[in-house]
Image (cartoon, rainbow, N blue to C red; front, side):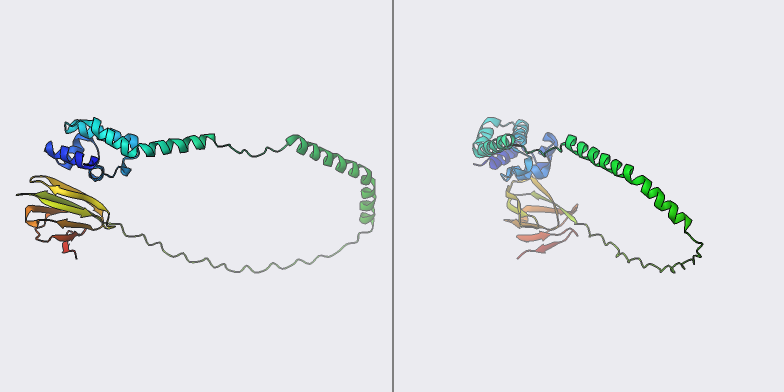
Length: 251
């Protein structure tokens, strides 16, 4: 028997619904449903998954030791692989960029400045004489102002209005078993299995998902369906619940 099946059986023995267990453990209903389906990837790591298993076992009065032993046997290899990868990252050499040699750069700048100063020192008298001769021979000149060009109007590109994407509607579906109960399989719009198992009389299964929810029922007469807060009677063994509150037959 898998860990998820053990958690489901323990919850049913404690006569608790998913919502009641969520309120007692402060674990989201979606995460509890995933754990009962043996999907621990949404726990955020094996450390948190073990903590959730202990919390659930404490509330439903179950022994957490065999459950944790089974979890460690199935997921211990993943922890060891993660630790090896972390050690490999720590041991890998770190390449640092080479720092510029500022002393050489400053020295080269000083040499250039000194050379420029020596050139100006020896050429300064010649520059003064040339400027004096230009001043003596300069005649009056008439300058005609250049007409300024007429500014051309600029055309700004027209921005296309941003059309926001329509929000994805959510579907809230609650199914409660009556009489002898029934077997259920629930999938989301991407065909990912959300829940699979038998609902015993009085037990409710709540599912919230973006978009449509597909359901396969063993005995529809033993099932009460509430869609988006409204009870919807149905005799279909395969149906799809839509965000607009309607049920349609699934082929």
